[in-house]
Image 1: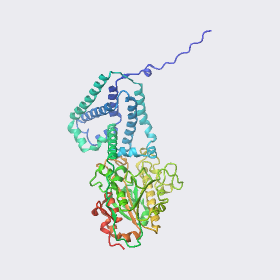
Image 2: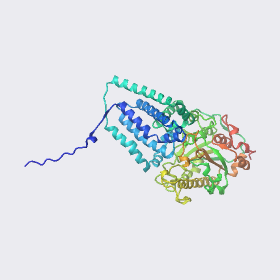
Image 3: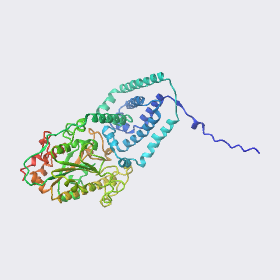
Length: 555
C-alpha cells in the first residue's frame, strides 16, 4: 500500500522574498527612515520656533528634511561597509529608537554632557529608564527594521568599483546637503543661529557626533593628565593653642531645585526639619550646569561658570586636592555614580551597592547610610577635615523611590518611572516628598555633627542642578545651559555652623544671614571653602568668598 503523500507547507511568496541591495542603497534607505521616524523631537522644536510658520514653510521643511537625509547618509557612508552594515546598523536602529523615545518623552538633548551622563550611569539608573513605554518604539523603529535588514542580500561588487561608488555616495551626500541648505539658507541659518541647541536633536547624528567628541576628549585627557593647582596651599597660622580641629561636611545634593525648597518660601513646607533648626539659607543660588557631569566638576573648580572652560575644569585638580596640599584630610562618600574625577586619587568610599538593611533595599540605599561610621573614619587621622557626602537625593525619574512611606505626605503620587503616564501634580507630589527626605537627611547630619564634642563642625548643602517636572513639556534635566530653564539652573544652598566653629573662625552669623539674601552661585564654593578653612593659596580669590565680609577676629 502506497504511503499517503503529506502536503508540504509553503511560505507565502512575499515572506520568502529576499531583495538584493547594495550597501549604498541600504544607507540611503536608512537615512530616509531615520529622518522620517526618529526626529520627532527636532520637528516639534523647529515648528515651535516658527521655522515653518510663514508661507514658504513647506519648502523650508522639505529642505531641512533633505539636509538631514544627506547628513545622515554621509555619516552612515563613513561608518558602514559590506562587513559592518548589518550588525552595526542593527545597533544604530535600536539605539536611535531608544534615543528618539527619550528625547520625545523627556525633552532631553543628546549633547556631549548628556552622553557623558549616559555612559557613566550604572545599571540601577539605566534600569529605571527602561520602562514599558520603551517597548513599542524599540519594536516598531528598532527591532522590526533590523529584522527586515537581515533579510536583505548584499549585492557584490569588485573592490575598485565599490570604492568608487562609496566615494560617489559621500560626495553626492555632501553636495545634496549643501544644496538643501542653500535652498532655504536664510530661514535655516536663522533657525540654527538662534537655536543652536537644535543640532542636538537631529538623530542619529547627535549622539554619534557627541560620542565621538567624548571619546576624543577622554583620550586627550588621559594623555595630558590633570594640571596641579594650589600646590602652595597652607593653613594660616594663628589658631589658638589647644583649638579643636575643624570638620566641614559638604553635602552635594542631587536634582533639588530652588523653587521647591521650603526654606526659599515654597508654598509647601518641604524643609520642616531644617526650618526648626534655623540654618543660614541662600535663596538665590545658580548652578554651573544643568547636569551632574557639568556641575560637580565645575563647583569644585576655581574657574566656574563665569569663565567656563570644560577642558580646563576637567583637566585640572579640584578643591579637594588644594585642601590636601594644605594638610587638610578629605574624604568623598558617595551614594551616586562617583565623584566625576573631583576626588581622583583621593580617599573615596561608595555606598551605591551597600546592603545594610537599616538603610537599603534591593535597589538603592537612602542617603543616611553615608553617616554610618563617619566619626570613626575621620577620627582615624588628626587635624582638620573636609568630607563630601554625594547624595542620591531626588534622582529621577523614579522620585517615588527616593523616600520612605512615612514621608509620603502629598498624594496622589506618580508611582512609576514613566512620567508620561502621570499628570503633572502627581509628579510634583512625588518630587516634593523626595525633598522631604533630603530635609530629613540634612537635619540628621546636623544633629550628628552637633553631637561631636571632639571637633568644631559645620555643614554646607548645595544641590548640583535642578529639575524640570513637565513645565513646557520638559522633564528631568540636562538641557543645554544656554537655554536651560531656571527650574534646572536654580538650586538650594543651606549652611549650618556649630557655635564652636563660628567662634574659632570669627564668623559673624548675623552678618552672614544678611549676606545670604544676595545672589550666589556654585562658583563661590571653591573660594568660600578655602576661606572658611583658612587656607592660604594663590588660587584663592577673596571677592568670591561668601564668608569674607563676615569674618571677624577669631577667639
